[in-house]
Each structure stands twice: as structure tokens, then as C-alpha cells.
Length: 95
Length: 291
Image (tube, rainbow over the protein chains, first blue to last red):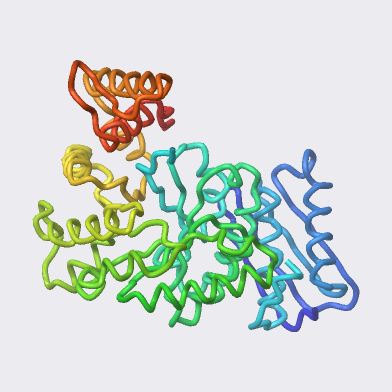
């Protein structure tokens, strides 16, 4: 999938995260989190795995995490990417 | 025997924190709401949140209901894809007016189950009735499909449709009775309306006593604080439990001895009385809610 425009998904409430995506050559993932020291590696792993499933290899992905569970991270990354790709129809197999 | 279904806690599908933690309140079932609780611009993100929240192991052990948007809205079918593929036990259809609404839902659920490899028939259906038409057609709705699990009354839209407003409950009297009779005739469960003033415990308990006496299985809830109040109100009295224990003991004794007729203190006990006694003991043994 190709990120065509800037988009965001999520909130900065506790147990949630805000994901911003933008078009960019190459893939850049920036993560800030209140629990970066304990869970930073895991957050990155979930983000990378989610992007890989969606076949996203280019773009900037900025994560502001507020202690979200993996399920919320997946949902918010997917939401931001789908909005950034201007994707109306969803292929559930990539989720 | 089925588990009690006294409390169905509504959780907004767009709220990541509540979706992640709702299980701690231990309601009998949790409803992830994709309809009224979700703003139009967050319908897409809520759908994804609910799909992934359904994957949490703790929710695999609970009864999770997903309320989708109506199928004739731009969101309904997409919500349904997320809910069925995510593994929701029950789909709640809002604004059900007639049996064909449930048949349309049944057809789409069957298609999605086939496409995603989910066991055919494993997704159950709940109709929410919110209008005079829905009430008039309640029995046809309740018996529309073998997937029918339950029928729920939704009060706010209903009283608007009836050109009245919420009050002491008299405005819902016919609707409650109609929904309940349809559910019992169809052998499915019935859920009462939300009580929206979460600070009015007295009013809430008065309503709970009424719907318990009418025979509802339980109630839709919008605040976890109401769970303990509801469960406590549904608990049988000590006297009811003792009587139920005696009836069940007599039934088990008759079964051991191969007797076709159950008798207690020289009086015959009918099968429905035994079933009711078992239901009372099950309610008495249900774990208390945590607040």
C-alpha cells in the first residue's frame, strides 16, 4: 500500500496512541512513549509487523504512545495507513 | 444450563482504554458499540479497534456482543465484516423493524463466515427494537432466524417514535411486555433498556425490580457502577435458595431412583418448577461483580 497523503489516527488519552503517517521515500518509524524503556522494542516490533502485513515499505510513521496494548497499536497504525492511502475498501486478510 | 445474562455493559468502540479494560468489571456480557457511541469521523478507526480488541485472549472467554450500524447505512456492512471476522459471539442490529431486517443480516453473516472460515452458524443475532413498528412485529423478529439469541428494547428512540418521553416506566409498559412475550415464545432471551441517569441508584433499582418481576433476563448498562447493583438485585433471597435446593434435591433423588415423577412433601413437582429452581441456584452461585 502506498501512503499518498498525511493522515492520523488515535488519541493522546491514556491506554491509546496517536499515529501520524506521511508520504516519504524510504520507511522511517519514530516512536515516543511513556514506557519506551520497558516496551519500546515491543512497540516497534508491533508497528513493523503491522506495516509489513499491509505491504507498506515507504513513508514516515510517527507514534506517540500513551501505554496502549498491542491490539490498539495495530488498530491505530492500520487506521492511519488506510486513511493515508485513501483506501475505501478494506482487504481484511491484510489485517 | 445457560449462564445468567443480567448485565450487558456498553463500551464505546472508539475508546481504546475502555475496550482494553472493560473485562475487569465482570459484566455477564460486554457490548462493543460501533453505532451511537461513535462519531461519524471515527467509524473507520472504531471498527479496527473493535476487530483487534476481539482478539484479546480475555475476550475469547467472555460473551462479546458488537452493535453494528444499520445495514442500510454506509457503515453497517463494514462493521459486520469486522465483528464477524473478529470473532464476536453476537451481533446486535439496531432499529430492527421487521423480520426481513434479521434475514438480511443472517444472509450477510453467513457469507462472511464462509469467506473468513468461521464455523457456519456460530455467530448469533440480537435484534434491538426501537420503534412502534418493531414492537408490533416483535414475534416475527424474534423467530426470524435459528441464529436468534435475544431481543432487546431500546427506550430512547422508541419513546420518541411513540410521541412521549421517559418517565416512571408506564410509557414502556406495552413495549416491555411485547418484547418479553416475543422472546419467551421464541425461547430466546430479553434485555431491557438502558437507565441513563447513573447517579440515580434508587430509580435504577426500582426499574430493575420491575423488569425482574416482568421476567427479563437482564438489562443494557452504560456505566460499570450499575453492574453490582443489578447483580445484587437479581440475586435470589435466602428463602428462595433454600426452597430451590429442596426441589433440586428431590428431582435428583427421583432421577437416581428412576422415578418419572418428582415429589416434595407429598406434592408433585412439575418439570418447569425444577428448571426454575435450577435457574435460581445458578443465579445464587454467580460470582459477585467487581467495581
